[in-house]
Amino acid sequence: MSYSTSYMNIRNMFWDGGGFELNRSGIKASLRRALRDYTSRTQAKILGANDTSVENLFNALDPCFTDEIEKYFNSPVKSQDEYDVWHHEMCNIFIDRIEKSGIKNTETYGKAQKIVNMTMKTVFCLDGAEIYDNQGYFKHCHIPLDSITIEWFRNKLAKEWYNPTRTKQERIRISLDGGPLPKWSNLTFLSGSLSYRYVDYDKEISYQLDDKHYHYMFFVTMIREYFVSGNEKNNYDGLTPFQAEFFIWPEQQWELSANGLLNQDLITKLSVNPGVSVHNPVITDLCGKLSKNLIDISKHY
Image 1 (tube, rainbow, N blue to C red):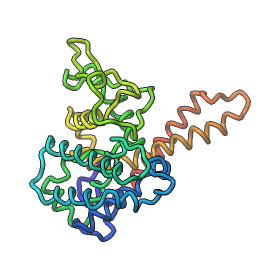
Image 2 (cartoon, helix red, strand yellow; image 1 turned 120 degrees about the horizontal axis):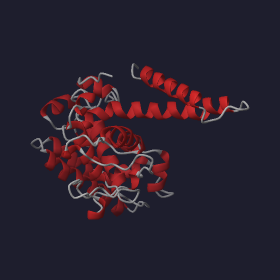
Image 3 (cartoon, one colour; image 1 turned 90 degrees about the vertical axis):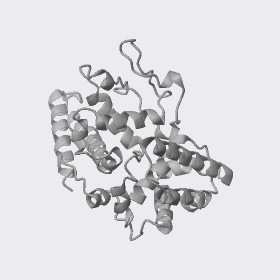
Image 4 (cartoon, rainbow, N blue to C red; image 1 turned 90 degrees about the horizontal axis):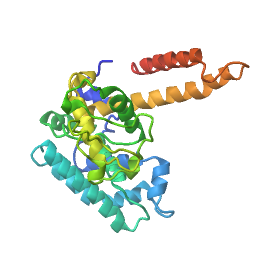
């Protein structure tokens, strides 16, 4: 599939901006939208029984959160390392402000990154944001990590990207295939040396990865390397990870929905006949082809 690098096409994959401009009012609207983007289940977990409105979360974060984002766009464009530092500070602000607000919660870095990244994604869609995009303000923004994007990570990086014939710098062993996906809401910033060890095949060192050992910067680093390695960057027509996520999220959601529908409905219906196994290779192949066609069709809409 060919992905458009046009700002308007990228923006329209998510939100039309709602008529807001990239100013203080627009940033506030973006923050509210990012908070609403939490699933009701996640919201119920981080809010107490008497704190169930998005507005309570917003009031806990504003004006501090809004101030920092406004300063970001009024300051010189940051380098990748400078952006990572700013992003980390924003996540800590999120956690600190929610904790000090008295809202009943169990805050984690995973939840903080989702709000910071979704706010930046929503700000990207505001009227006037294209100028800032052209100047590089969104170049180093991170992909919001949730169950959908982590599933994409499993499919694209863990299953397809790793190849023993790659150069040493590209030989990243990722043991997600077949294993449990880490819960995005429980991600930490870094988890210590045991969970983030450089892959050096000369010394036979590899990542020790399981549901307890993934951390946020592992995903950020691997995704960045994926987008600049070999021909992988051509898969997304030169889009940055942040830009590509506008296309990745709906595609991955559709793929999961299509697979779920086919696996749960079609296979179940066909397998009720005597002698027809759920693991029948013909049925499995048919479901795979139907799923692919549905996904291909969805990309044109």
